[in-house]
Image 1: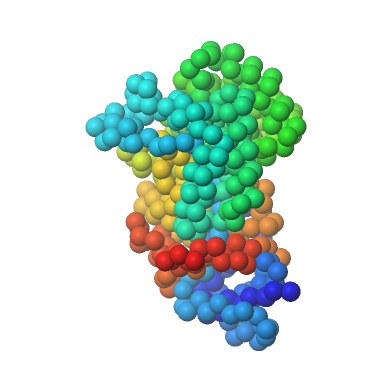
Image 2 (image 1 turned 90 degrees about the horizontal axis):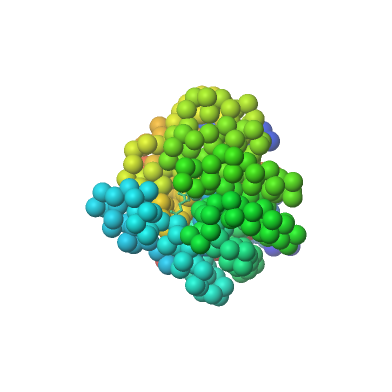
Length: 416
Ligand code: NIG
Ligand code: FE
């Protein structure tokens, strides 16, 4: 049996606590152990406690001296669009000239541009690019991500993207939770009803039979899929056993939060334009909001979602990167922590809770990851700082010292 002892963390941020996602005041409680340590056996956490106690139990264990650094659970990124070809540098420049996301999309950029590139790419090429992105996530201290399809928009291309996720999950230490987002946009060659029939009639049954995704998502937005269309798709997905996430109220307050509540979705994501009624609806159905300040920032907007109102309403808030080539080209959870504190007025403790334990529950993995507690997987990172608040405070600079997945080191500053 391989054992490993992490000793002398200035702060071991355990996030230990009650089962279930944390809401309200509980989002502040990080379960910090000063001069903390952790004993790991066969990739799982055996015990956590003061270093002196852990040291006594660790004869024969390989020692990792954290040297007064902060130790955090691996970040769990609950909203990414991991698999795509190319980039969107043209959109980026257009935005810098003042054009909006919707204008750029009409002028030939946007999701359709990436769809064209992704359709033309082979499964192998997509895997190579996704592997590079997986490395980026690990380097930032993220050890599990949710990943959405949605840049294929044909049966074969959506299957290709989901297969890439499956292969990457086997090849990379990064854990990937797949979501089918066939309803990301209506492809140029079809009208909406024709495409929805394809999603419901062919894509969903095939994906469910081959178990290629755990969740189904829809971009519920004017110009994409309205509430009625989103309801049809997500109801069909639920019947096939998929769980539901929704891109809701990103660009307009279009009823996405209400639909998420009605369908008892696991999460409603974005919510930049959601009003108090929408927040109350989410609360009534215990839907977790996934807030994505990276996309607000990268689109040059200041319309951040109302995190404080959501926390006050008792919602178990999650924050995520929304990693994608168009609206949020960042894999960095520390950057998201910074944005959450500076622009959504979350405390650093709330932001860390939202990026770890709450995110883990939103992916149905709350009993395996998201905190450093006995029995959980030993996925964690060391940060080059002494106080956990520094992970959100210093920004634009990597502070990740080393990253571990299931007790194995997968990344270290300066390379492995
Ligand atoms: O979450 N909103 C829809 N999807 C992405 C953007 C995708 C793209 O622009 O390529 C998002 O922001
Ligand atoms: Fe998204």
